[in-house]
View (cartoon, rainbow, N blue to C red):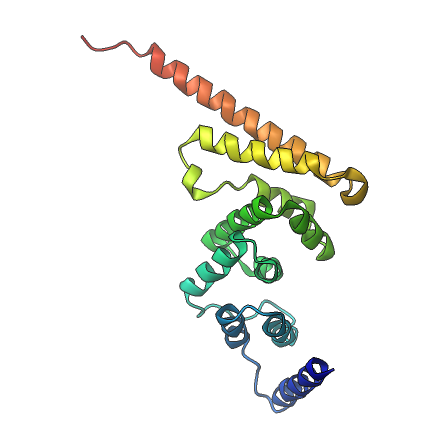
Length: 201
């Protein structure tokens, strides 16, 4: 009851500021959430960004803040993951890649919560697939680590009950399997090409 009252007061403050032509700063709201990622601050951030029809103006937000958000996501923080999903349409370039990578790591932490959250927010199959195919930076130039990550994600997907989570999990597992086989083929070809190079005397 007390929490609802606080929310009502804050909403009136935001609405008053909006009517007075004082824009609610989504950057400040996001900074506040990242400083203390609680349900209350998440709701206030959504309330602030909900006043905008287009992507919130976050151009001046420090890159360290984005890194902080992505770190929370990869460590399995649900509210940070929801924040990233809501902001993902505003990301581009490196920010999008970092978010997709952190989303994949969130799946590694809690596959069920990942599927439940993406389903609740109506995230497209393509975006979910992109997160699971985007491998962590520490696997770059290391096919063995890439294959290990993909195998782990395939196992987690196959362990999810299709009746509860739908056929999308089966499609995702097939997509990851195809990507794993491609990496294996490339790794084998590279190894063979190295063996074919004559050794200098």
